[in-house]
Image 1 (cartoon, rainbow, N blue to C red):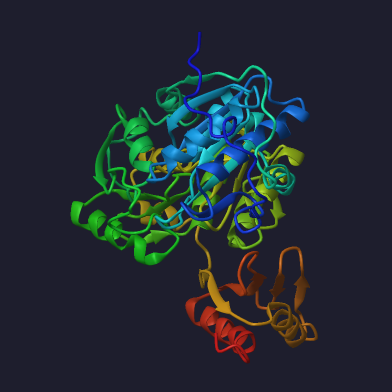
Image 2 (image 1 turned 90 degrees about the vertical axis):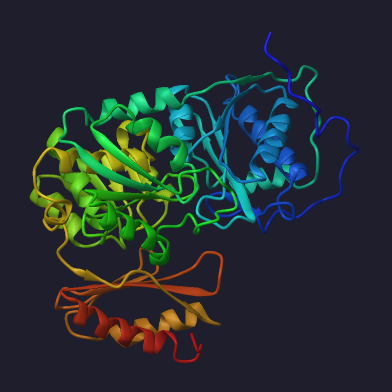
Amino acid sequence: MHPQPDSDVLVDRPPAQFRDLSEIVKAYDIRGVAGQQLDAEVAGRLGAAFARLLTEAGEAGDGIVVGRDMRISSPELAAAFAQGVTAQGVDVIDIGLASTDLLYFAAGSLNRPGAMITASHNGAKYNGFKLCRAGAVPVSTELQQLRGIAEPGPLSVADVPGTLTRRDLLAEYGEYLTKLVDVSDIRPLKVVVDAGNGMGGYTAPSVLAGLPVELVQLYCELDGTFPNHEANPLEPANLVDLCERVSAEGADLGLAFDGDADRCFVVDERGEPVSASAITALVAVRELAREPGASVIYNLITSRAVPQIVTEHGGTPVRTRVGHSFIKKTMAETGAIFGGEHSAHYYFRDFWCADSGMLAALHVLAALGEQDRPLSELMADYGRYATSGEINSSVADPAGRMAEVKRGYQDREGVELDELDGLTVSLADGSWFNLRPSNTEPLLRLNVEAADADAVAALRDEVLMTVRATSGG
């Protein structure tokens, strides 16, 4: 007999009043302030609603996999979510501490829906849920339906509750990744890993154990208070310690993971960050060598070097909107072998089209260790242009500012406009920019690429002059 869950947050409690969940149910996941917007009661309702949603779709029969990160609130929220699931008569497989890509591995290898309790790169006060269907298929459009089920309060419960089984999949996850990318015969490498006290400190040492890698651990202790820096390597300030440590250690490279370790950022032997677009191009070339002619997905903010390099190596580049649901959907439709985003999300067809920071890291280790050049020289083959990085501007009227920018460029000779995601403006000299509104804040996000840093600065300043004209941004 499997153990039954402990106390039930749904069965013995009288019906609760309506509670608005609109602030925490986002476009792609569920996220809010732990203990305020997101507590055990809400987690229990969400678990019950997810189980009900899957049951009605005929997808809950084999149970739901539940994993969690190291945040202080995660154990309580994971337990409450699991109790909500089992109260609906649906079984739970509790994999305990996990990175998000470990949860995707569980959902894929066990062919079961999954729920990951995490707030990814957000600060310590936040938590949330990333949900997927069996086979790691993303849940996105169904989130509002889930909210409609969860908001009114506890659902009626099943006559026979589901069971809860605990299972450790860390070793199986590592074995699977190292079968996809063989790094056993590479030259010895010295690698600094900055986990930001997040889940990379749990997965990376395990996956890299026994490989020809001398691992230097930086902030790999699991600590949901993030005492050293935020686990968000997209912010340059959070890479400073890693860059300095790589140089001090004379390491071959550095790897930085975000809080739930589904993203990986790379630092070369000089202590200089490597762009995610260059990593996308590198991995694409490796995957195309394995399957010539395959499609590779890139989002529209990724460097134009990516589609150029994919084409040069016989692949078919496919451009998408920003966001994991668009990437995964397009991968499924096209059968693409790989996809990459500017934000250091890397998606692999052989990993159920899901993103894995650790798998991307193994590709970088393999590429570096199979030849003798330092990483900076290796990556020079994949970086062709200068970029601005993402620049945010607070504006009162994002749509109005976007329209003003469009008017300023639409009649210029040689200019091409497209609105696949925000506004992308391509100029006659090959430079381009994308301006997109935030989904959750009154912000406009600007990305610029051009031949060199001076050209980037000139175009950036020109666009920002219009964006910030009336906003004081």
